View 1: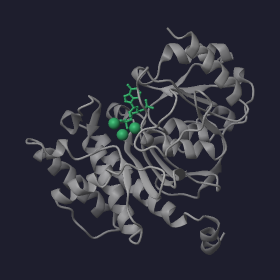
View 2: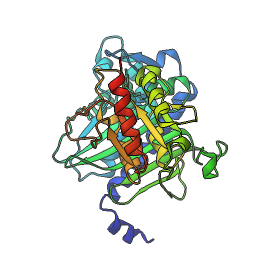
View 3: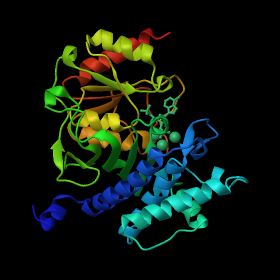
Length: 353
Ligand SMILES: Nc1ncnc2c1ncn2[C@@H]1O[C@H](COP(=O)(O)O)[C@@H](OP(=O)(O)O)[C@H]1O
Ligand SMILES: [Mg+2]
Ligand SMILES: [Mg+2]
Ligand SMILES: [Mg+2]
């Protein structure tokens, strides 16, 4: 397909190209940090969840690349991190470290000839303070999703989506530790070979995957399993993020035979979107409110061929600001399994102590 017809087919082609470039550069910074992560690179936020120099650095690079690549767009971004802790006394060293990581990644990337000051870094982080909402365009960014997995040396993702008039219209999901080939034996894949997957989807144009380092994109689709007995399911690696008594009771009701595949981050949505497994279940503890950046990108990558619903069977609504205003529980699967999975989820939740 010529570049001209590609532009005509995808109304968000320019935004998609910029988002892919931003995620790929941010992922490079993350990969470098993950290889040599030290305890001093990890801080604890006010909500006691971890944040690392790479979460901040990734947020800086994404905001920078989007502004450079789309200079005529008005810029609004709903992102997870803010600069509050980095402006406190005693944070100077960490801020210096982030600034040099960002500048080294830009220099090695070769696309931009620029150097950021510490103030530029703080300002770029705070570029993510938007409240989003139902009107206009807003980027949604999780600079590192699965920070706990990142620190452990496991899966994580850089997740960047675009909200347009309250709908997620594109998503780019960089998963540096996810093998490019499907891990599902039934798909002829194996966990060997090239590692680093970049998933992307635009509304109405389906979902694709390519190597994080760049390769010919491949169209992907969710699996077509229609008997839950043959299905396998993904859930969080972290037991505190999704209630395992409920997910195992749901699996039992469905007759699922395979043990759960536990993985950090929206890499689960990416893997599901290419048929590595059949179901993703996330049932947080009561009172936990989900953020938009934890699900926007994963959900557009899956809904290109599959479905993502809350426990009541409603679509997720990303137009309400920084949080998802919805019933507890998120289920992603194909259209054949969704009705039976929803029924099992609702029964299990009714029986919950
Ligand atoms: N107690 C909790 N219950 C549910 N989700 C939680 C949680 N604490 C943190 N999270 C969210 O779970 C995300 C990771 O999901 P997963 O379990 O699929 O890896 C985290 O994203 P970050 O790592 O970006 O902070 C965070 O937003
Ligand atoms: Mg976090
Ligand atoms: Mg997250
Ligand atoms: Mg995060």
